[in-house]
Amino acid sequence: MSTGKLMLRGVADMARHPLPQLLTLATVCMVALLAGTGLLILHNVQAEVLKTQAQARFQVYWSASSNMTDVEAQWADLKRVTGVAEVSTFTPRAAMAELMRGLSASVPAPPVVTVDPALADAMNASANASINAANSTSAAANPGKAELPAAPAPLLDDFSWLEGQDILPPTALVSFDIPPGEAPEPWMGRMYARLRELPGVEKVTYNATQLNLATGWIALIEHAAWPALGFFALVVGLVVGNTLKLMMMARRDEVEILSLVGARPWFIRAPLFANGVVQGFVGSVLSLVCLKLLQSWLGSLLDVPPLFLKVQFLPAWQCAALVLATTSVAGLAAFIAARK
Picture 1 (cartoon, rainbow, N blue to C red):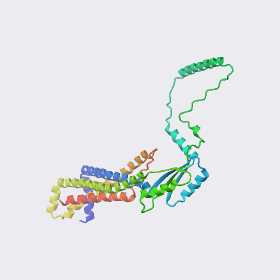
Picture 2: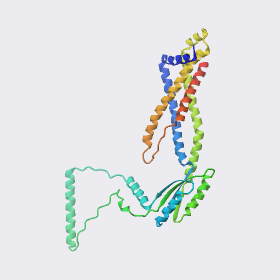
Picture 3: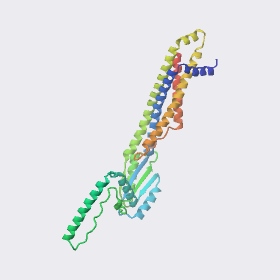
Picture 4: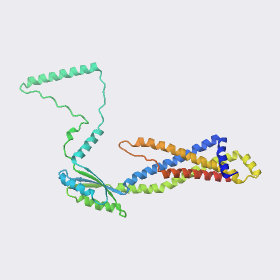
């Protein structure tokens, strides 16, 4: 019998023991899903960290009394500096608009109180009577003065009185690509001194800790990925190998009869090897389907203010590597189990 027919017979024999096969398939799928989840986390953390790994960000504040024409000319010069990745500028009016928007969003809406209409009418009548009595008393005491209406109390979320007041300084957020071969901290120190010397600049801030943290995350990801993947591969191998070993023990009489009639070892091992390969392939594909559902759920959960985290799915080569690795480990475990 050809090798292809032996493989097909091994796939067909899976229907003879459906419950152990389904349990093994579920276990392989869960382990592959855990491995895929780890890869998904590492991929997204690395993508977020790489955005800031080779970039330095400076926030530059000009004096509030600076001439905006001169400041805008300096902004244009900054955009032409070598190594600049992005320049975000805020005029005093734009900064005030952002502040008002942030303050309005941070103030909670007043609670809605439902009052009985009859009680509300009684309360309004009592309040009007008190006001009229007070006005009559005030008019009798001061007959020559006219009554002025009381100014309405400002609403908690009404910051319109800030509109048009240029009390914030012109600001620029400048991102630089650190030149290759340059040590980040000394380079950022030199750039800080250069920005601080600009005419009218009152303050410059930057965060070197963020850059060091990004570099540390990259090193941690590179050192933690391979041990974790090796652990998942070991678990898949143990699960598939032990399951097939138990199946062989259940079919010991059949295997001994085949050996007695002169069947070659490959004739016995090939169906079991095909069994392991199919378990690994189907389980890894199902894990990718579950991982896609998990990524969609996390994307809708995290892509909201103030997080705005976009969860990306695994690249195609990582998906292929996960399927190939799971299938290979399962097949190898099945082959080793069949040899014993």
